[in-house]
Length: 365
Image 1 (cartoon, rainbow, N blue to C red):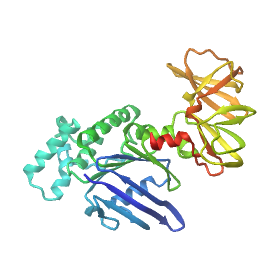
Image 2 (cartoon, rainbow, N blue to C red; image 1 turned 45 degrees about the vertical axis):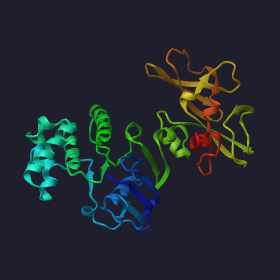
Image 3 (cartoon, helix red, strand yellow; image 1 turned 180 degrees about the horizontal axis):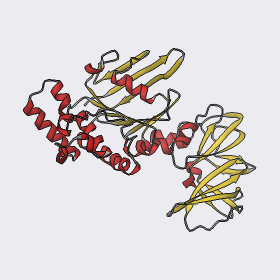
Image 4 (cartoon, one colour; image 1 turned 45 degrees about the horizontal axis):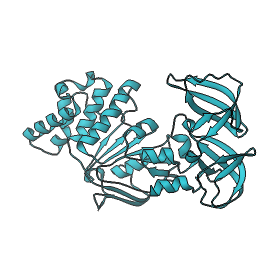
């Protein structure tokens, strides 16, 4: 396996810029998820790493070698597609072994490597079965096996679980991560599903309109989103935003919402009078009769172990994750207590998070 280094990668189709100056590194043996909605540039980025698209500018290094303009066949990578791309007239054994056959590998070695790969994927009992009769999850394992058997420098996967139903997808998420742990493969995985990315990846690159908004671990992206876009994309429900207009001085430890002071992590910049947003995750909100910050209950979604309560405030609607046994009525006024140590502040004009002690802790502790 090998490190993947992407430097100032850009892809432009006529007047449309699909990927804008992306720079990131996937360490040897690391699992990276490229996450974002359709059209954000994640698949184009993957295809450039694979050699299926040539970049307009920038560099791609694989294991220290500059492969920017190498053909896909010269990059020693394995690509797993969303639609499996299996040969229906071949059985499982021949599908997995076909890349080795194409390379002229001896038959005895092909047989040994195919059987080793099948055992790794727990499909050794299916080797002589036709792929056309397999369930979706097993067909995906065959596609993975055909990639693994080559022992490439890295694996590239383009939404490989997208066609599976929810039950199979949950199983395959666990198995893909377990497989990664066993073979320690450098992997780049494209998905629009935040749950897949959070469950499998060591690092996540959240993309938006061809730009990487944040590149970090799942925990850092969830706890300390770099932008309102990231905060809104990650989380179910996503982060709440309470908008207000104010000026802040460096060292400030509170903001005012309708005249009510709300504690925040220490602000590290001066900010002139501007529109700001206070970001708070649903689980960092509590209801307290003593709190002067008030809202009106709009509705509740019962989830068994907890409930998501929607509350109207003067700064916008927010959702709170509270105990399931808390009794609330629609239209009831409630007091809101926010966990001051976990709040983020954003500039609404740029959408970027303001530097604060919350983000300093992310870098130093």
